[in-house]
Image (tube, rainbow, N blue to C red; front, side, top):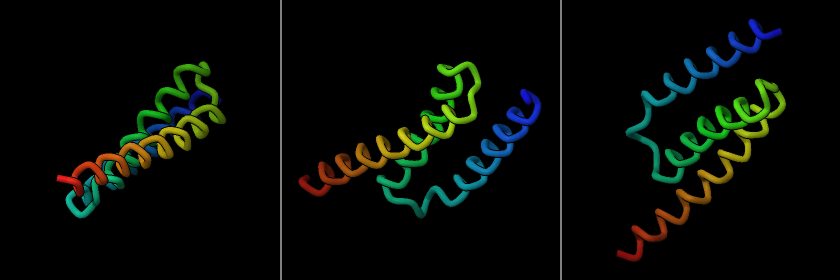
Amino acid sequence: MHKILRVVMLGGLVMAVSACSTWEGMSTREKSMVSGVAVGAVAGNLVSNHSAWATVGGAALGGLAGDQIGKAVEKKKDKK
């Protein structure tokens, strides 16, 4: 089971890095969301002792948090 989880995590990491090749075309909000997903997935995995469900949950929560942070940053930029 651990080998399968490692392969899935590595595949996800490769996909995330390849998605960053289009990083220049992304808005601040989108960049924050992608970063939040990555941080949330890693945090969920580490906190739960490598549970797949916690990894997915952490990614979802991290994406949501990153999206809201990016939204706030964009609003702040618009005010200037």
